[in-house]
Image (cartoon, rainbow, N blue to C red):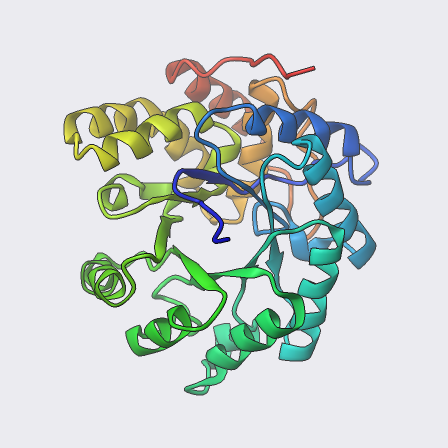
Length: 311
């Protein structure tokens, strides 16, 4: 059965204790809260927002299990698959499946970011992961300004492979978006298209089935409403939500580096009462002095207050 991700798919952060260990109690709070929100369709763990590549392998598998337990296995857990080679990525996915993952967000081989990829190589990566793990795969389209952003022919070939039923698109080039998303839709009408343009979601909201975003950590209620406005083709409602969220978007994502957004997400979760602090793992660093107050003011402006975590 194909996973139904037509809605909000948050990519949770990985909370740490002040000493830098994975905080499984905080995972329980975060996962149970996100899982209680109507319109949340999955939790996508071990991504960029989740500092997945900063965890040792045992921690990665324990994080999958912890988020699965936090939602009582009611929602699918999707694991980021990041290992470099096909064999290592396939075995990583197999282990993720054994830990309880139901899907795989397939990252490009990281060498491609610098050097580009050989034509046909990404297709072999998806095939190897599917054949070894049986996990449904999400085609992950990287930003246009990287050499790991797949051309349209590559996307079409991957989307046509067995086990690939979704695409997470973060191309961040609207000329390509307006060409490639319709082409994918025409070729594969059942392909579920998910935007991950956290820093400017509004232009993509009328073309997608849902969102797969780190932003889903901190404002899931409003993002569910934004998705519904997009599906209803209600631009006025979507724009109003966009404007309400804009101070938060600026405080979290319009920073010097997109990676700083992970640290800012944790401060956002402090403001919402889920986390007690914003500890991250190096090479991520704390935000500059005053950033916590800036983020708190943005949340107050958007009227995003503390939440009650389900018992």
